[in-house]
Length: 359
Image 1 (cartoon, rainbow, N blue to C red):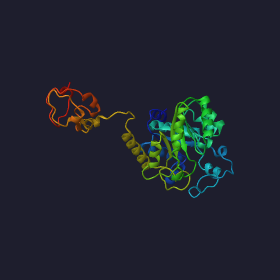
Image 2 (image 1 turned 180 degrees about the horizontal axis):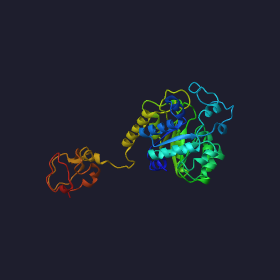
Image 3 (image 1 turned 60 degrees about the horizontal axis):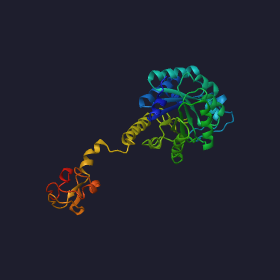
Image 4 (image 1 turned 120 degrees about the vertical axis):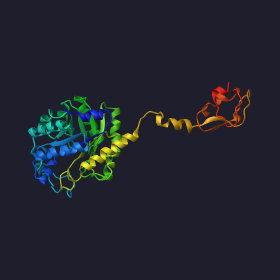
């Protein structure tokens, strides 16, 4: 199975996950095609746009939400007011369909994963993917967390709507059974997340947890509406989020569900191109000059210059010297090595001093 997420993230390379979730149901209805054909179409479009992995959601409404569970999303965007009623619309797929999607992704060259929301789906997905995702909504569902941790695979853990104590408790539970890579995804459980609520500086705090826990990777699960220049994703990356997941759709104008805050293929391309440009300009962490600076380093720096004519045999004093460009002679930093030396030849005014001229 393809293992792009962990491989790229371990090398510090950006990873973009298109969370198809259950958006393919609406795409199928719009295009008058089967649900599976719509899911595959979304995988293909996401892959060709440049994503590194695609993620679905595996659940059954009957085991996920009580029938009286209220909504937590903006009902102006998604009018369904019951979680149970919403999830019931999108829960028809099971093992055989996800197996088919996993194989399709493998053949296409994009990593497949799906978020399990119950023990049953966590079990049947085990053979279909290399990495698990634990939703923010299940961070305190320690029964499910422990069950997934015991699968001994890398984990993506969203930490939305959680405080530090809850995050630490869940990390330590996972680490009790699992020492694989653990990606902590900053997340805001607000659908959609207002830009001023994105709270991206929290990524830095998650990054700091690497000092305490081994093999942590920092990421971001984004629920904001796509911005014009992908600034949200680019800022998250600059703050340390190596792995970014965002809902994906083929039509952002579709009402309801997760289309209204999802990225489309154009958004994917903008994000990928933006990150590539950031990587280009970031360069190295080494405190050293670049080869491209060699000419300027030599010619824009200064050398010790004779401020007056210095006759052969003269003992050189400070007032006989000045400093000017280029830097092809003795550096002003070595002034003390020159003062008190004797001129071996006549050194004319405005001459660049060289060590062969003095002794």
